Image 1 (tube, rainbow, N blue to C red):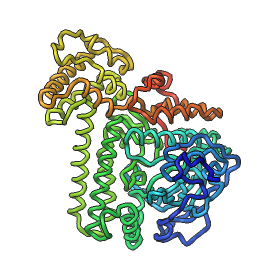
Image 2: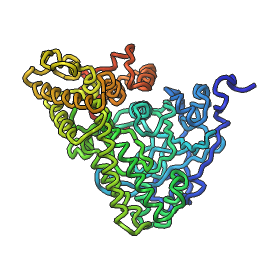
Image 3: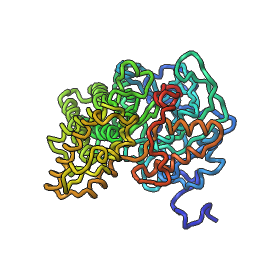
Image 4: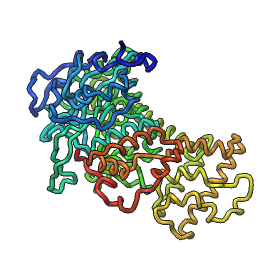
Length: 546
């Protein structure tokens, strides 16, 4: 008798039926040392290492869509075997756990060897469609790359990573995914704000899923060490495994590969800017060569619109990774990747041309996104001034970005009659929810003036393209999410989970599956950050501690 009724996705498998095809460990040089102790790993792409056994694992949540993605029947996620495997206590047949070696630039400075210090790759699942998905446990214990850390993770950061991975996917932002979140039953000591007051917190493990977790830093480390033979092996493997459409490896293919990384990175960053996401730690070791968002640490969404805001306490002074600087930082990071692969090409001009591709792709994608956010059929030259003025106006008083853009679609701009028929109060009523404190009318006069400019632009769009108000609203609501994973919402879920109540994690997971839908029953989640959360730990800025 089959383990599940045939009518329920007969192509999906049990855990034991999953097929592993571990190309990375099969084809790339391994660390010859098998002992698990902190060290510099030379001439190898990875080290074999087993997850640390934990005492009493407990499943907090799982994403059924991700289970299906890797070919696993969602019912399997409710079994004790699933909990044990994705806590790190058991290995499935075919798994070959390992941690990868990489370096990176952190806050603009070369940091040398970093590596998977608290991440262990279990192996590559090959699903029925022939797709490879790497399963990676974060927080499953120390590796040779853990440096002075313990390789573990705590519940608060794990909840944030689990929920954000899935929230970003459903927002349409390229990202790694998350299969499961498991409590370990162990306590982990962390100094949350590096104040010299460490506390014991519940330990947890997230299973992350992606076609590959290869980062810019994987290539940087071998170039920095002048291990060019290993660098070439890694590049060639990456091309064959993740970019087979580009053809056989060689200098021309290396250039085409870098051009594609520039394009996909530009598209990813434009998506971040569209939804108001701030990564917080855009080090080169946190940049995926697949152009997907990776490593959810002290991230955040803009509450009040502020291009200078960073969610990372470590970045509070320099603000290198602030919201408005993310496009430039991504370009800088790509330049470091170009430097790393230059020895394989020995020609700087095509690499510089690829960086120009990044600039062009980002600009074009951003303009398309802004046209959609404003409900326009296309972005024209004059719209640069319109957007610049809007961003200036939004900073005159504290204005929630997500709520403003969502409610802008509801403003009655009276395209078929004189705007003067509406009073300023009537015009601004749909936007009231976006203001943290409703300012005096004279303070809002620049916004009223901008709405008049916006109206004229919409009339022009109607004349040229026939865009109706209904079409405008539909276009805007498809680009401007109603629900995002605000830090205070995540913290409320963390607080309940710490007490053993996982319902809010499930509620948020369900909510964020449909972030562009109205969801009237979830209207209470469409709200500004409460005043009590403005300075509460975990609700505004965060540290890298996990």
